[in-house]
Length: 125
Image 1 (cartoon, rainbow, N blue to C red):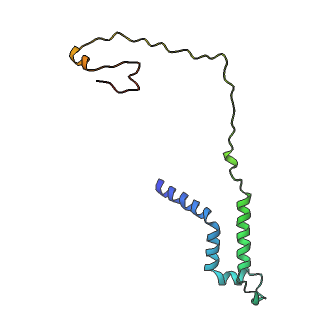
Image 2 (tube, rainbow, N blue to C red; image 1 turned 180 degrees about the horizontal axis):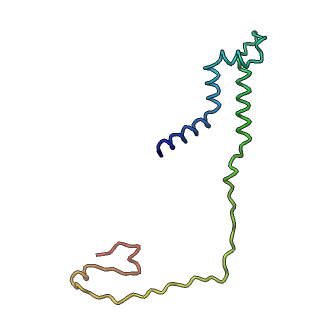
Image 3 (tube, rainbow, N blue to C red; image 1 turned 180 degrees about the vertical axis):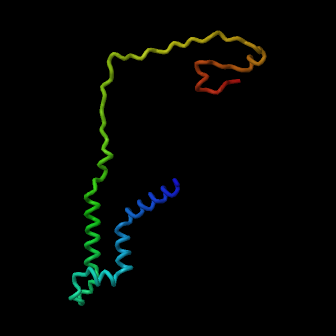
């Protein structure tokens, strides 16, 4: 069901994106019918309008509809600048470490680890 809905939304996006091209394709496919029904210049065959007047009206209508839609009206961002708090002073963290017990003195002699620098450096042998 979700795939059908996703395909439907994709088709809607494509139709909206290529609306002008679809108008031109519709005109080309039904040129004789549009000329007979909607052409303003039927009585002037030397102009060779063939319904282009109707096509231009439709394209103008589509352009007007595009220009009336607000472009990015929902994407306005409001930035707020906050002043730093003068009473907040960060305190240095006190590091309290438990005494180190050596469970295996032979292995411990080959391995050096300092808890202060151990986070940023690999252990040294």
